Length: 487
Image (cartoon, rainbow, N blue to C red; front, side):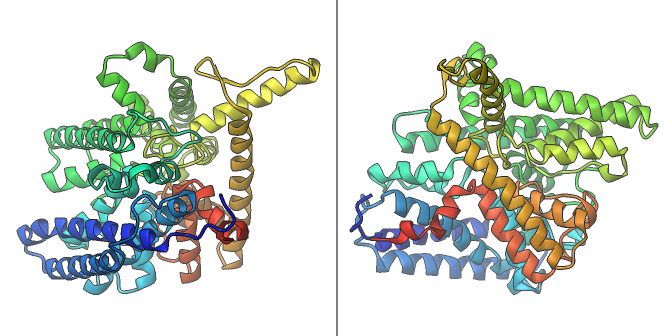
């Protein structure tokens, strides 16, 4: 970028203003449920929604003349990072103003957890929450799942050539696929697939006896790989049918959405040959068999229950959804150790899943194995291949840097949380669960615990880790570089 180029703050404020207008509209979506169930929280949803829309309209109006084509890489990074923060700041208002979550720190933590699809919660009694607020809580997942910026590109195509910078910063993975040459059409197709899968899952859950309200909330949490539900025991109290339905859609949500588009076009062979998909399914399949065997032969559960709970927990953690059907910390050490290791995997690139992502692990493994060959044949040029195509060295270096930074943040973050008084397992569990956007971790933040006892400073720190994980490190960390702000 030119050294003398200034950041276009006008277009940044204008776009964030438009995004806040969208958030304000969606904030009203819980009002019908509030009125239907006779709760009084609709007034707080209406007030918060109106305030958010007015704030957004003001930011837009003051910068209306900003050049829509003035979005470069720097503006793209700023818009993406700060829009997620702004959404969480305003999205927390209904919880805080209503008194359902009296502490603004807790309300912000819950909202950031929602938009980043982490699913970590401070709520101790979810079922006592008013239905309107509960619906908004699940809606934060659904909006954050496909991505706030992708939503913006889908319905407000005002960015022109600048849209790709925002899409690249937003969409997970080392090289986001485009379904269509025009970024606006790509965003629309992604959202059509996302909405369609959400509706199908809602229908299947209702067919299993789940009420419409609960079906919508769980479909939002599943497709966004978020994990917010409507019951204190997550998915444990539901039938095996519902647990299998949610498992299936968690797997679909953790796939690259480009593959869904190819499936719709009937290109089954191309999907079947996808290296990342096969690795994704292999990791989940092998992990399920190991854990199911450990649980069954340890006389914890019968064969079907051992398989169902093992499959559910493996898929939930790999895809970073965070739903639970049982307390896996009571299982044999081998079982929950495997689950802990899976917290470092993640879904596919281009999915709503969090974590490091399967494609990065695949590239890392293949590059490591090829390094052995290079030691034997130092003059040979042996590229890493993915889907039978060579992967550029730039992407390989990016993956290596990402993995190193990720593990450094995990180690440093765990140390910081121990300084705040947390025990070792809770410190590690809370950090990887936040950084990987998983939700439940280990220790007191495990599958039957929550984050209410974390100190306020810890909640703000974990909220930052959630944002880092959701935007895949570089989008946020680059803002701390002095070179980024020079002009």
